[in-house]
Length: 194
Image (tube, rainbow, N blue to C red):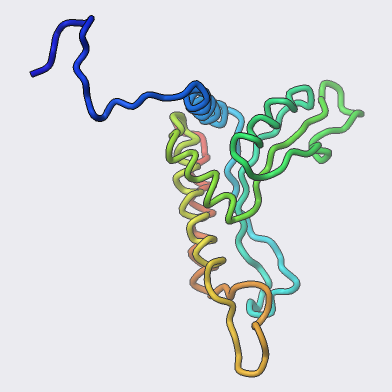
């Protein structure tokens, strides 16, 4: 029976004590998910691969997670980079022109590696779920990342006497079709709706 005396709380084997560092990590992880709801971007796209001879049209799927901020907020992007332990931070030259009034230089935190997306980014947002409409983006994007990771984890196609069969895993037409469908679902889910 539970004790109702607040000075003598019940002992529960499930109660865990956290160190200050663990509490800070939890606080930052929660903050990062909320921040990503407003500033983050989950992207799926096709890229042309000249070296992929196993795919007739040389297109393969790719994924990205990024957050772009004004350059004077670079410190927070560096904190995100250190917290997640993956990706990179760089100046985002494409989004800045000194000739456009009111436009500020930007810095971007970006993760493109499918292994880092699968092993670092997805687990973070599974542990600290998004709360706003970006949750739909993440849920769809995660399906795409899982497909990309499964394809990347395949053994390289080999033909007898030809060696490793190339650098990239073989994309089937079914893979391309699935990825395109997931990409379109992500695009459709972003349309404004009331």
